Length: 111
Length: 114
Image (cartoon, rainbow over all chains, first blue to last red; front, side):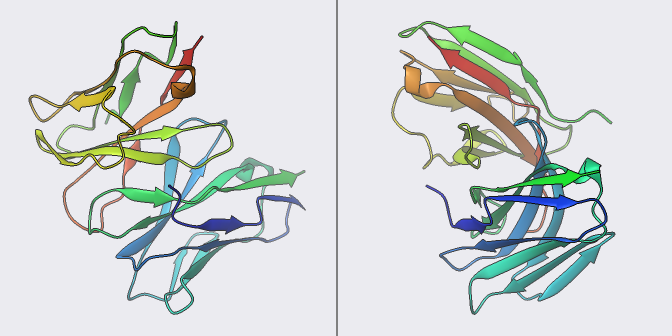
C-alpha cells in the first residue's frame, strides 16, 4: 500500500518557471527521498533528507521536510524541458529497509 | 561503473505459466530490493535482501511469488501460475547497507500476462 499522497497529480508549466510538488505521509520516518522517473522505467535518486533536517539543497532542487505535519515539498527552480518526468517521494521508516512511495506528480515543462 | 541490470527487459507470457526475472545489483551492494509498479502508480515494495537472506518479505502479495539471492549478489524473482493482474513493471534496486544510503534502480522488467 502507498504511504501517502502527492499533490498535484499533474503539473504543467513553462520553461523557466519554478515547479513545486508536495508529498504527505502517514507514519513516522527515518528519512524521506525524492526520485525522478522517465517513461515509466528506472528511477533516479534526486535527494535524501533525514528526519532531523528541515531543508536541503542540491543544484536547482530544494527540499523541505515538516515532520510535525508529515509533509515534504520539492521545488525545482528555473525549470527546463528536460525536467519533464514523474517525480516520486519515498519514505524509509526502518533505517535502511524498504521505501514506501507516493503515487507521484507528473511534471510537464513546455519549451 | 555498471549500474543495476535487469533481464529480460520485456517478458510476455500466458496466464498460468511460470516466469523468472533476474537482477544484477551494483558490485559491493549488500542490500537488494524488489518493487512492482503498475501503470500510473508509484513503485510498491515486494521484498528486501540483506546479503543472502530476506530481511523483509512483507510485500510479496501471495505464495505464488518467491525470490532468492543464493550468493548474496544476483537475485531472481519467481512467479508461479501467473495471472493477468501480475502484469506490471518489476523494478530491482540495490544499495550499501546502512540507514541513509540511496537505492539505485535498474531499468525494470515489463511483464505482460495474456
